[in-house]
Image (cartoon, rainbow, N blue to C red; front, side, top):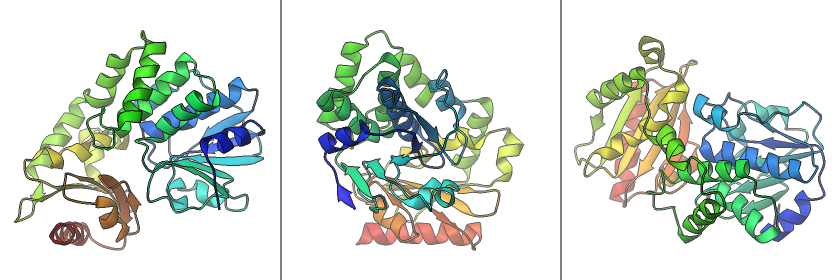
Length: 321
């Protein structure tokens, strides 16, 4: 694997044709913003590309990409954006196994180095922050639509700039974007991303809070979402992304855990941390990873009770270490 600077990455991107841009399953604002922004950057340079994801985009993020269309074509180059591990590609991992990943643009410190080349900055708050640096340092285009996509990625990966990963470069990037495009509806998108909930989602939050498990120390809180609740409350899986914030709203909680049952009986887990924990290290015990303060993993071949107990125990052990 080769490690590339922004300048080396920019030089490489300018030589490409017929690019497939891969983003991770369960897409979030950063991978969608980054993947589609890169597509538009390449398009502006006359380079054909498309964005591919194993899962459908959530409704909110689909609205963010309205008007962006691409045809199907065989890939000559494959680039992953905001993907720390091949397994996060979901079903696309098998599809691209023979070709392999030519370049990975990522900010997760847990990146496994799976690509032939890597443009990697674990100090960046978001992949979109790295793509903004390409715009700023390497003379890439910044249209109004690209600006909004990059803003969305940085806003969502920092919890609207309240997480500790939001650094000086993050704020500088957003300030420059707002300076160039002051009339974009930033406040409206912030409300869509962070505030608006359907009636079913409000009911779901109530159920989750009522059934929350709190450790004896009060440092770990866990909520479990059975798969049948989606149909009962008429809530889509896309709507539940924000439930990761619920456990962390309790004073004294240092590790918040959300366990979501999947249709096949497996579990997807999201963890958030306060000041004391490294949830990436906890998730790594279960085959996952991510950021120090925001990570995830999957579990299968166990009951919900077993999964929740193991996660609570691992979190408390990490806090004791």
